[in-house]
Image: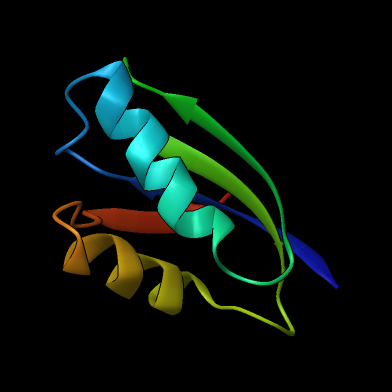
Length: 74
C-alpha cells in the first residue's frame, strides 16, 4: 500500500543538502517519489508502507547529518 509522509528537516540549507537527503532515501526499496522544498525545509516522500517506515527514513537521514524534526502524513 502506498503512503505519503512529509519529513521536516531543519538542516536543509542548500540545494546540495536537499539532493543529498533525497539520495539517501532513494536507497530504500519501494520509495516511489521524493519532492523537496528548500524553502520549507522538508521532503515529501511517497513509499510502500509494507517495505519501509517513516521511522526508518528518519533514522537514515539522522545518521548522515539530516535529523528529522517531525514526520507527518502528507
